[in-house]
Amino acid sequence: MKHDQSHDYFNQAKQVIPGGVNSPVRAFKSVGCEPLFIDHAAGSRIYDADNQSYIDYVGSWGPMILGHCHPKVVEAIQQAAAGGASFGAPTYKEIELANMVCEAYPNIEMVRMVSSGTEATMSAIRLARGCTGRDKILKFDGCYHGHADSLLVKAGSGAATFGVPTSPGIPADFAKYTLTATYNDLDDVKSMVAANKDEIACIIIEPIAGNMGCVPPQPGFLQGIRELCTTEGIILIIDEVMTGFRVAYGGAQERFDVRGDLVCLGKIIGGGLPVGAFGGKKELMDQLSPEGGVYQAGTLSGNPLAMSAGIATLKLLQEEGFYQQIEEKSAYLEAGLRQAATQAGVTTCLQRVGGMFCTYFCAGLVNNFNDALGSDTEAFGRYFRSMLDSGINLAPSQFEAGFMSIAHSKDDLDQTIEAAAKALAAV
Ligand SMILES: *Cc1c(COP(=O)(O)O)cnc(C)c1O
Image (cartoon, rainbow, N blue to C red):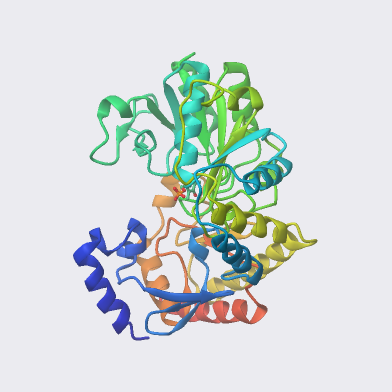
């Protein structure tokens, strides 16, 4: 395919936007080509500036579980816009979406809306620190929780070492409060907690790690962390920004039968508009300003357009059999991709939970970030570029999940499998 218009736009964008993009991974740097500029989308497809169409498995990085431009969501946004884009005052729609969230997640008794997943995790951590009077937090290597200072930290060499910032601009003094452990390694978590007794405010975790591909929790891992948090007085923050309303209506917590003290949401609850949310037990949430002293605010929080898109989206997800259909479509694609890899004689590791999946170019299972780093990113790059050329839009990185939508037809899936067979044969 030709990408003349995208190429021209990219050159223009680089003049006025750092790297030409407003979020780094959009730049396609890790797959060795230039980004597509998108003109519009509909259903399972997106259309680039050169008017070529692609079957889309990025789905705006997760939110578009209904596919693009679902008529009911479009209508809800249009109606809301006609009634006023923002008031800076409460509206009934905020109650409606809050009620829907509380009903879906029994451990969320109260919820506060924010405008992004980053704000949700950042605020939940501040609340956890405020409630416990402790400063340290524990996260997992390879888990992404947005770009707040204390979260852009990865492990030092020893398990017990303090974190070092992975981005310039984060004071080391600040990063030292962030501990990191290995995903799916409960013993590692236990020893970190023991070494920092009564100092850790919260453990924050992706219940399925979707920002290093797709890494499911091993049986007992989340439950073990839950028990540990309860005995140690540590607040468990389950970051369901990606998995919430994705792998089940009640998210990964429903699927794996585990409950956080605080929960972060985003992506799907905004139906494609900028939204995040964090919620949990009333006794914790009551510590937030104006009831309590932990400050948190937002000019556009609970924005009427975003609330309307979220409400319309969640209503459609409640339809009988919705998640069953997502599961069937995803299982069909998984089987096809596996077969294509076998036929091509390429070693891949396909991991999937519901409508999120990743094809790693490595042998064996991927259980943590180190395993993920063992995959052949050059091979992924070749696969990605061939898929794109065949009209399949995957996330432009080995360390991202693919997302299924309800709008993907059997034809779309067959085309994808056919393209994968061709791409894998040449990898
Ligand atoms: C996307 C994501 C975030 C950040 O959300 P933004 O809206 O991009 O700020 C946080 N946590 C997880 C698990 C995510 O997938």
